[in-house]
Amino acid sequence: MRIFDPHIHMTSRTTDDYQAMHAAGIRAVVEPSFWLGQPRTSPASFFDYFDSLLGWEPFRAAQYGIAHHCTLALNPKEANDPRCVPVLDALPRYLVKDNVVAVGEIGYDSMTPAEDTALAAQLQLAADHQLPALVHTPHRDKLAGLRRTIDVVRESALAPEHVLLDHLNETTVKEAKDAGCWLGFSIYPDTKMDEDRMVAILQAHGTEKVLVNSAADWGKSDPLKTRRTADAMLAAGFTADDVDQVLWRNPVAFYGRSGRLQLDVPAPEALHEGNSILRGGE
Ligand SMILES: [Zn+2]
Image (cartoon, rainbow, N blue to C red; front, side, top):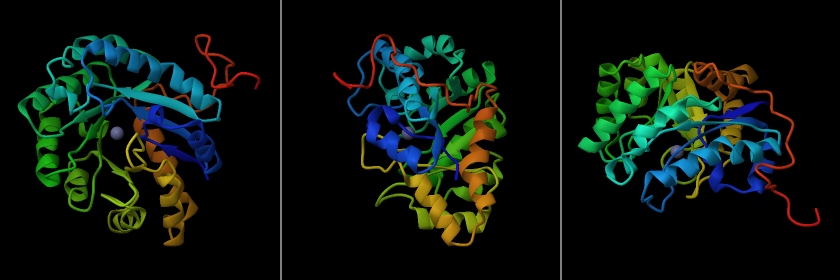
């Protein structure tokens, strides 16, 4: 089984996670830039983070046989902080980099006017750079948030088939599908969406344009939720080809729109800017 996790924050995870992910069949990941928990205080903090997503993290993933790409953006939450917003001016010079396969994650957190502005500006950046967009939908007030997101997408220069609407659930899947967007589902422990509910959604809505991710980060999350969903699909009677479509071919097709996906994992390099993941004596 080959698995592509299209939304996971590996910066927050350990080398043990990389090892377990590879053993579970995960061969490719996309890491969207997002909020760090601790609020950032300046654009410079984003630049070091973006450089890490473009350099150190692919280096680390390659040590475990996993291809790593990223999506870059000002995240919805920090779009509300005037100290962070100037990062938008610097994004164009990052979006031309080889490993960037989308603009993201963008979208709504609390649905404020500042979030409106940042979302519209970044959909335009995606269109300008011929990149798809990864759009986070809010965890509170989900259906209203989804509708407002779809309205902004419709007003943008980016066609819906270049947009992945993420963190969907039973209440939002139908309208997202009718809008012509790609459909992302984040499978979490305990809360929000779990693998059995995901299987029921696949039974009701089919496997076309559906992507499943772990959205694992520094919070309570599980980087193996993609594999657990694949196993739940097989147990429910889906074929190995259905699993391959959802867990591999769909994310390849979506991020492949960037023209930048490199799924052959590069031979691991010993050092990145003089640093390794090893400790003395190894
Ligand atoms: Zn995320």
